[in-house]
Image 1: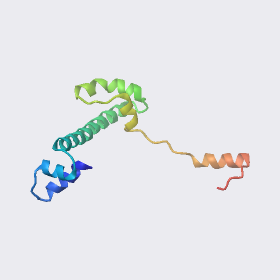
Image 2: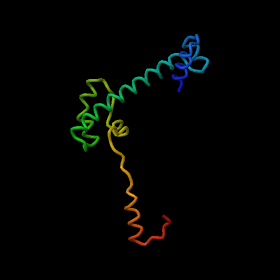
Image 3: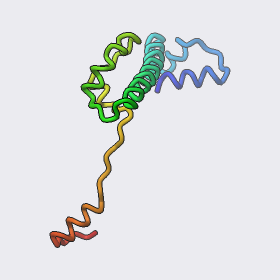
Image 4: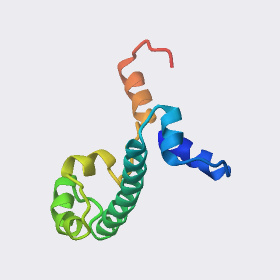
Length: 118
């Protein structure tokens, strides 16, 4: 949240050094660059991870996260991407979300004569 504020301030053409802007907002210049670089790194690495996962899922669409991480581990190291199995499973790139089958619910209600307001 802090880095976009500084970028917006600079884009308006206002004159000011980054350290002065950061000081007014209550942060250090070092913190500004740390946040800016981490956001850029995260978005770039997530795009690379997404491309690698989608290319692997084209070949094997129903591959699990553990095996997917095992297959892509060498490519992550070659491209210097830090992505563990937990991060890969939490992002879950390329997976379809499962939906609830409402017709099954209605059929169960009818079959057991449950008094539920539908």
